[in-house]
Image (cartoon, rainbow, N blue to C red):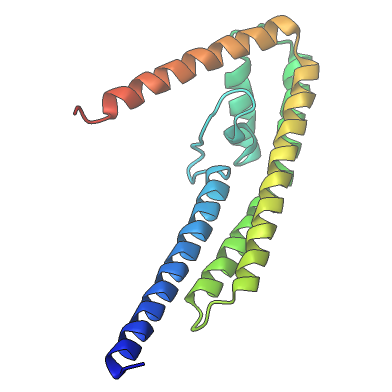
Amino acid sequence: MTEMATVKSTKAGARGLRRLAAGVVVAITATVAVSAWAQPVPGGHHHGGGFGGPGLFMGSPEHAGRAVDHMLDGLNATDAQRTQIKQIVQQAATDLKAQRDTGRGLHEKSLQIFTAATVDAAAAESVRQQMLAQHDATSRRVLQAMLDISRVLTPEQRAKIADHMKQRQQRMQERMQRAQPKQ
């Protein structure tokens, strides 16, 4: 092999390694972003709110109480229903706070892995697997809370909430379409 061919081969190998590293960073960033999407946004705002939205279970107990009241407005919910649902939501919020803390720790761990002098692929994969498990646990806990709430509400009340959610989703889609640049 000539000296020029060796230099080209070495440069190509380094370029391929950089591309691989960039791809891994993009994959981990995407995993973190998906995980973050399921977490609350500071200030109590959330994605996909309403009945069963993650925001219903996030934040302080006072926030949870107000969110439940808002969700139940217009449903003719009894005081007993409101009390039961507030308890369900507050317990889920407590459980999910611990899971959010775990998620933050995993995010920090992934940043440490990718900012190290040498990126440990096995450690990155381990963190990715832990993030998936944490996201799954969060999803299971939200589902359980939603099922518990559904048992407290009547079929008519659940239908009203579903209708409200469809209207909200439609308004959101309309806003997103208006916000997209015209081509």
